[in-house]
Length: 372
Image (cartoon, rainbow, N blue to C red):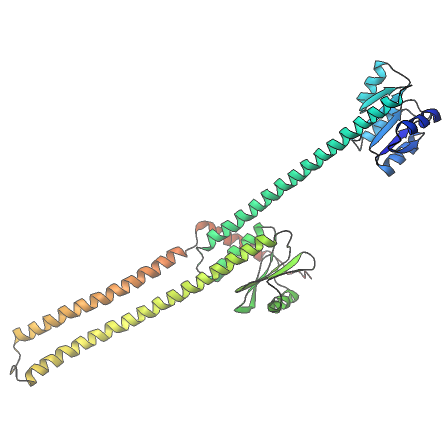
């Protein structure tokens, strides 16, 4: 049931209002002070003001109400039915005017219309606020996803975990949060954004394997327990889904870096093996040349090798040696090409280098603070 504040010092009209507005809860006041006090206490859906009161006029009460409330409908009542009174009532913020004496049906109709309009306006205002809130949420989520997308694109150029973590903490900063992260293979070396890790934070991270994949706790904090990394977030806000995507990307790129590092190590081992093989082939070719000459003499094919025969044998051996070495060199060049391509893919861009420099500056300027 809607409340109506009726400000009038005439008992006859108050009884008439009770009869005309029986469907509403009527709050009565006969003077300025009690009217303003009742308005603050009950927050009525409509205020009915008599212009001629003993201690003040209805215009003054209307002014005080409108200083804090621009929307609650105000209905002026007066024995004056002239244009000036109506214009002043409207100018002070009134929504309607009714002259005394009035018919009950007229009063009820005006009150009903004013309250219906006010309720409808409130509904529209609430809908507008809901829509504005929804738009703001969409814009915020879009901005957060752009940050995650920028991290994913930048991370593809990271050639080591340190560079990757620098980009990761830049993303956390852009999302408006900070935290402490450990690589699960090296939990003794926590990495941080904002302030360095406290002892309690490190203890929580060291025991995070007993927690679920995502565990929120305390004052807006959470632990993200992933396969290769564990993150303690100091300001979770509404970022739980965004941070989960960010952690997925971080783990994926760490896996790619491990694979690439393994490939580079295998290439290095292959280069070393090729170099050793090259030296061994050269030694074997020399041994083969001498052994072939000795064998020809031993078998009695010739009594002694002349200069032409020896040159022919050496040329033949050298030709095949050159072919073998060409194959080995080609194999080495292919390994170098693969290594060069990996280095190109993992070379940080200028944008990433700037982000890393900013992240390092932020970390250098931070002081240790106990957050728990």
